[in-house]
Length: 57
Image (cartoon, rainbow, N blue to C red):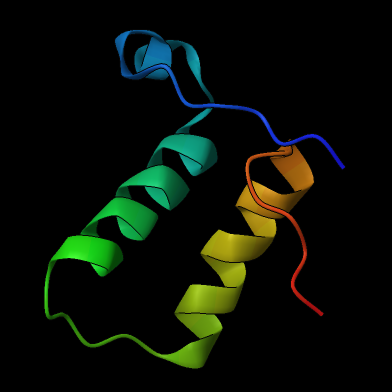
C-alpha cells in the first residue's frame, strides 16, 4: 500500500477529523502525553482510512 504524505501548508484544506488525527499523531510522537487506547484507535483509524498510515495488524 502506498501511503500519502502530509503537506502542512495544505493542512487547512483537509477535513476537521483529518486535521485532528494528524495533530494527535504529531503530539503523541513528541510529547509525553497520556491517552486511551480508544483515542489512539480512533485517530489512527482515521489516518489509515485516509491513506496516511498503513494498517499494522
